[in-house]
Length: 221
Image (cartoon, rainbow, N blue to C red; front, side, top):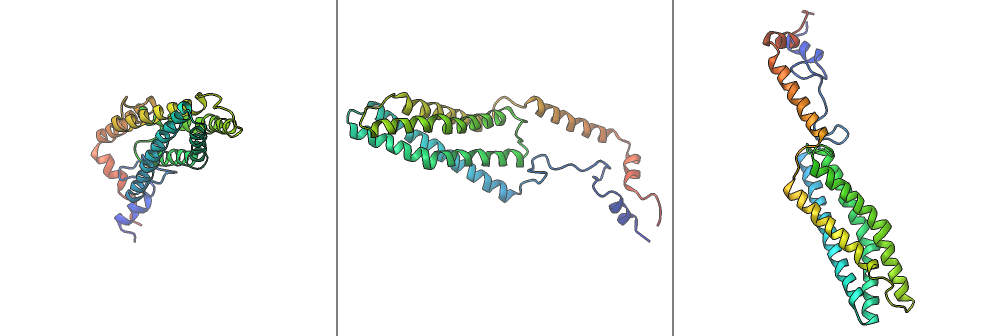
């Protein structure tokens, strides 16, 4: 003969103590919430990658200014070749790592991806900057290297200045977003908050006898 406690555990599998279906945690990746070590590791990776991306962009801007203002052809060629090296081997991997680690943190923590305006804005800025790095910054640097290597002058200073300036502005703005966390919830975030608040009120208003009968066995066998 099953005990009442065992029967209650079997009959309420997949349900909470109040008789409502269990849902995945609020911050989860595929319904699996990140553990504290995983969350901290993802945060460290994201912060390091973001800081490296920001520092690399500052270096690219310094090299671009050197190439655009340098009087010596040797200095100009050295500057654009260094820019190509950084853009080909470091810039895109750091951008992708920043984007991927940010997605893991957004989807695996209660912040969510589309619940807070600052997170949503930062995601799209990171994605746009990554795409611009591949389709605008790198081609501009490559064309500058090709022209200088052929013995000609730098064709357009914008090829080596525009990308780093825009990228640096975006990174500084995203850093401010991460620190200040402005603007509150999105429309989706407000709906989720109101839905959870309504569920809590409904359960709080439910008679105590009904909650006890939902968890008690209906038979003795």
